[in-house]
Picture (spheres, rainbow, N blue to C red):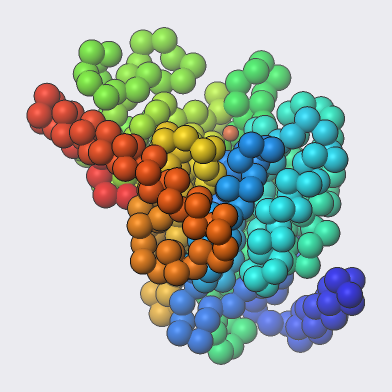
Length: 400
Ligand SMILES: [Fe+2]
């Protein structure tokens, strides 16, 4: 049945391609996913789910919460940006991915996947094998870029107008790799940057204007440290720069920012020019990453918002009640803007609509447990913010 549906979808896509719609045309057709479309109301809603780290001890609770988040938010697309189910064997990874993907498959929500540093690091299986697992579900629109590019899972998702085939928006999805040969985290590679540069320019030529876009990947760009402010080591709530012994950073008052900087951002060591290419092309409004599980912030730097999202899992303890998901909303009548918000589990469980979405006893027990643990975590966080404000005069947590 799945195969039949995929065949029908492929046929429709082929016919659309032959008809030469703007949404499909491009120099990068092999790396272009099935186009999405703005809704009747002109809106497009993305649920950003990342760093689920699904294992035996958290998969049930995490997938229940993600299912309720889908029911609450009604996304048009789920973006999965890596470190999702890094189990020891392919068999276990298959089980975890099945539990996650059935959430989306049963709700007919399209899913786009790319990978993080942990997704294939143990060498027991490859990224390509894991991508094949995701793509065995009809709801996956992800692309295995094969030998074309470094890594697996670098592609473009076009979003068409609600009522025509005009290309209104793009989503760039990058596999930001795992580690370089020296053990540092990786960054998006040169050939991926070259692909983006060429595809972006071709799209501008074809459409006679820049098409605004968002980028999604696991690992944040090194430029995050240019966007922050370097301070002395003794300044409260400053974080040490990764790979640098004596450099400490916090939010810069010079740049627009919001959210929580709760840990050291961890980009790769070698910079292959992704952020520079994006500022040069001028079509990316914001880059969304995961990787740094407790950071939920956005910093505007050189015209691009560098945005980090929380780990979307719940481990059965107070600390993970501060995890959650991000929602991003687009408007086809204002494609040069986007809206975003973070939802933490400890706020999520107190939403009246969420309480009504609890489907069974297990859901209700889970919400009650998070409410209990979350109370402590929330007051602890509020206290942390208050102490920081009183002792330093500085707000360390801006609204998410
Ligand atoms: Fe990671």
